[in-house]
Image (cartoon, rainbow over the protein chains, first blue to last red):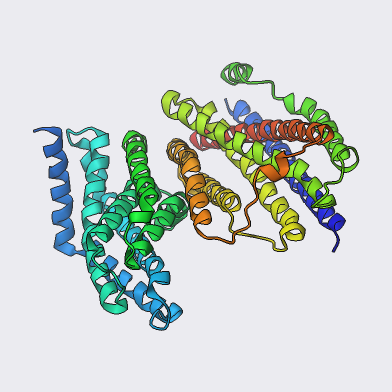
Length: 47
Length: 225
Length: 241
């Protein structure tokens, strides 16, 4: 392996880790927001 | 009663209940003996220079058996509402930290003395006249372990993972302590003495003072209900 | 409902991350371009040295994040306001993401330069220990028990972990210098003869990773608040039954 493939692997790992983490945060937030809306509307109706 | 007398009172109570069952003492000594046995097979120090691996073996035995003792002593408080009773005592929460540290230190020093005797018996390191220096290193190292262990064990027994949490919290934080005690101990075990290793003693001292201080200040936040 | 509305008004706007997405993306792309085409090829290490422009800023961001955990932990123990605990949670997790990036890019850079993936050099060892401390922190977060107890425990661990940092640094450096033959990478090998284009690229890298950090932190804070609201809502549902 030459110097450039190591460089590529290093840079790719930075972007992959960042992307995967951001994507997970976004997905979890979106899902939770939906569930929360459902629960809270039910609570409000109950009140 | 003065503050010190009250602390002594709590320590006396804890030691009496420990001496009644000897749970922590026997389990740590026996465990340390097993560690020595396993490392004897793993490293075969008979054919190798004991000064190279001896300090590591000794401190792994001390570290793991101390984790056992920390969990044992804190679980006793968790059962039967022990800690709630202590919190009703007319002592500041910070004094409870010192009392717990003192109990743990005394139990560990007792078990470490036995372990050390067994270690010298089995591996016969060229100690020279370094017994006092070795005792100093062991004392400083154990105080450091105790200062962190009291805090972390009090946390760990209240988590969902119980005892399993303690080593995960303790070992990474104790890395500088472990480096310092192993370096200092191997200097003593090789018969060279601590002359060249003053900085490890200073590091140990700084570690002990710092984490006793932080433990003292933060213990009330851990006991809060 | 009104209580919830006033509470969110005192917090930073929930949509801050929407602005940060394009800003951080552009900065990261600019830093990537600069590291690949603008900065000159390093004479000794060759092209692989360009990892440096992300590796070092990530390390810097990691320290900033863990410093933030320390400050938020102190503030939580002092003020007992939930928002400091939220900040500590978010900063610890995002800091660990950056620590992971540092620990991945480091060996990839080290392999062609040193010939091995890992050496137990002072800096590598202390970064690994730091990562372990905060992984333990995140485990304590997930297994620590109910809300206030876990907040107090984590605040104490956050303080102890951060105070331990300089001690870890000194101990592993002394430990390594005692053993000859270790590969020691000094600041000097990078610091000497830095060209201005290298300097500009590294500054760009720092700005880009800080923006990425800000984006991750705001998103993680938003998730944390949603999770806490969900727990509160579940409790209310249970009360109503």
